[in-house]
Picture 1 (cartoon, one colour):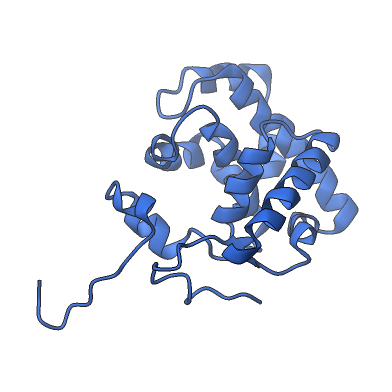
Picture 2 (picture 1 turned 60 degrees about the horizontal axis):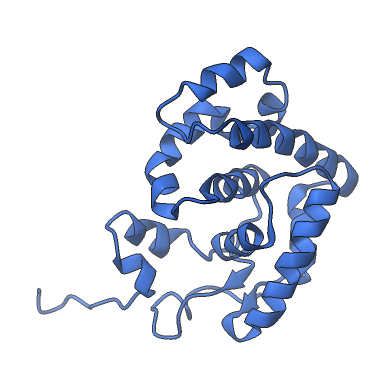
Length: 190
């Protein structure tokens, strides 16, 4: 180690694979207000169901290509032949239910945008518009359960409470970095 180099302490999970480091350091827990990225992350978290985040992270670029960079307007129009092609795409998780979920979620996403003006405005209401802290974990769990029920009511799929909690962590709705992690104090609690 170089003399001037500073050792960064990260959340334990981020130390288990080299792909986790840039994701952890640059994305995880950063408040997201971009509608396209919120749609992407909700669907990637859904794709993770029953799998590991590492599996999805390794396939993320393939997902972006396969699903038109998660352009909800395009994804909402996918035909059955397009979905059949996606089932043959080895770069993504080839699960019929998960592929159908992305197209169904795109339609629900567009309805929410019409109703609320943006998905961002809708989704952040579950945390009153500002990130929760790790100390508010129980509140975040309750809010993820409410989010899950509301998303399902609006026609979204693969949005169970566990998926919603992971989504909240990923898009910075909760700053869930460990207290020892260098990122915990860098992220805003606006």
